[in-house]
Length: 167
Image (cartoon, rainbow, N blue to C red; front, side, top):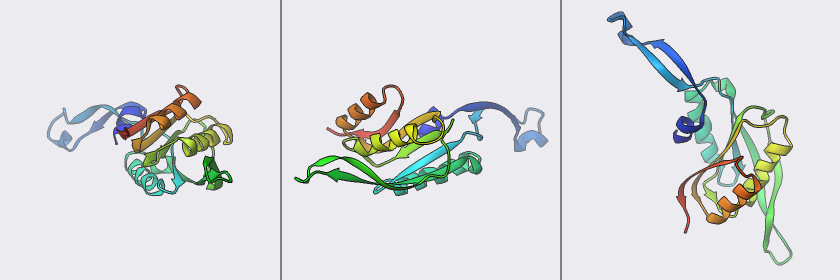
């Protein structure tokens, strides 16, 4: 909800309240989250499935549900012959359409090295139709390595939200 309040587009409204029948001042006038905002929440299968589902359901309560979608990516770490981690590979996906002008959310509990996230964001930026309006990652915890990798790979292009910074 914090990300929605801070980062999503808003629009002005004037709307009757239940007090309208008692007073001519029974209106709310102010800014609301624009319900027409188009959003994709991406689950990176491993730990990201449940957080993405929670985001999807919350977004459907605030926005027009027909403008909210959930995509799915299957990823694993890749290793060399010595079993050292060499990166991340995408092994499957279910993408429901283009990303042009959409807010794209990547809810994933742990931002460790940034390999999977960089791979996923690169796919959305380079392989799908159109350019996202915003890319936002959401985490319970991130490492300095994660922040460095994502911000140097995509300078000024990705917003990172985290509950806690490791170390």
